[in-house]
Image 1: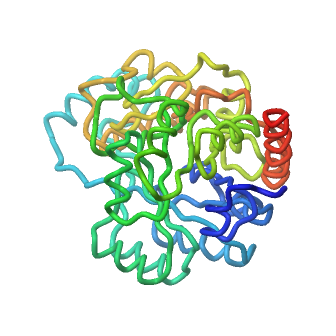
Image 2: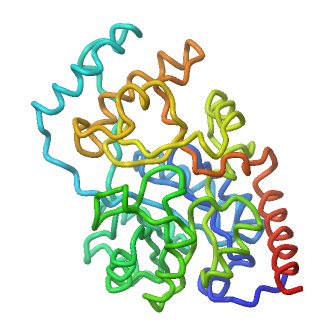
Length: 357
């Protein structure tokens, strides 16, 4: 397909203005490779990986494709430990611990923020793009990335955040509408009730900044991509639609939940990590949230809730699994990631053709 807007194609060196979202715990090197080989921008996610784990994923992607790809990181500031708040939260979870036979005080894994060591690894492997959630790295790290020729993009959930990111030197902005699955990328605001949807957010961000804007949230097929382009976006980032591909790390129980979900199945919740994130409603979300003022600061909440997941899943239950999903789970398809990209390109061409008459 011949794309009229070539801003992302020329910037990233890709054939199609489609970015596969870097979903921590779901994205795999195989998914990134297949997506990039199909002409879109594949992504890997560093937020839940050790440096050794990230190195392995870099090596796999580099061995699997010579095409551009993206690596994503969280850039939250690690919070001070609040022992009283943590103890109160664990007390609220005590009944679940007893039910599942989990020892009190058990800690689950946390999420690492981008730092100098991670930056060293990025500079070693030099992906075409590095993307960030929850803001931007420190200026010194930004200078190292930019100095090495690595393009930097980041998520904005408001026009104010988009302007802040542009002033910080990003090469493109992901306008993340409220429909998006997983964590909200918000960093200058904390009121989720005032977050705009993709249709409202994208054109306002486009009007406010000069760098290319990438639409995200609720986009799962070519119709959504065409709509994003019509709103002035230079491309679209798509996540949930890739979660049923065979390359995804999505677990069997999560896959089953996605297949049963509909437009009314998700909500924003902070009971898994301490930050608002969109997922399918399950038991812990219903009983503890969906938004709890008592949840410890991100990512400390995860240290207490994560230990419940494994024992519950061993019983075939998703009661304590973070079932991340956007608001369009029915658009997820069971097909190879590369074929999904090709299908979405064809769908976009058809949708744009209908619009042009």
